[in-house]
Image (tube, rainbow, N blue to C red):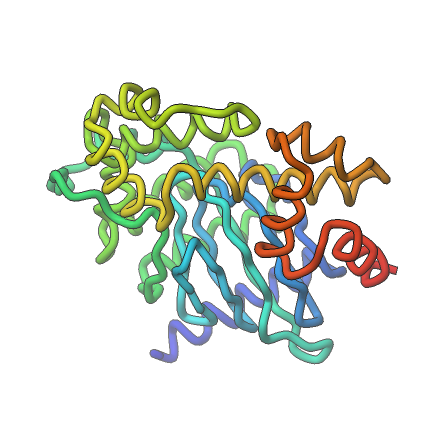
Length: 300
């Protein structure tokens, strides 16, 4: 790591500490920018990861996507190019040296705008790419991120400069070794963008049963092609993807209120409570009631 990069990371870490005094995810005056701080190793948290760029300045985190494992820390960044059900856990943090990170969300249309305004050579191809990747942060990217976060010290400049800096950040990611992943998701007609349409459909209708032929029709693919490209993008099958969404939502509902397990199972699309409990235990390690009581106690 160069001395310049080290200084940039140090300055970013200090800014995040300054604007996030307590543990948790903190909104900022910059739309779609979030600062994250954790002073303890966290429980694994399952959620849908929106299209986003995340960089760690201190500590380490592990992300599970299907059977894929992504481990990253200072000097790395992670990108998700579509909505993905993941499980994340901060695995290195302490009161003396808290986990510090930032997340910047984006849309496919914002990526497409950058592509349209540049001469980046299109790498659109037949083969879909995994929609999540970890990469080493380049000085040019880190510099743009630092200038974006510095705007928090001068909020009056945010309306004009933040959109430009966000565009620059996307530009540097597109220029990086995995830029084709973002590019494929944004380019209409690519196999990856057609899988994105299927993902959107499943997310918006996760509680409903579907026939694989219906999803293939949405993607304008054969059933076998849909299966192949969907797994390449998401690391799971459409059925597994839907199951994770259902179980994540069920856990959220159970945590939010003391709702009956059978009612929650029905609301997220299960017809059998026993099947729901089996699959819940397989995903989270405990039966629904035990898991929720355990998590509530850990929050006290």
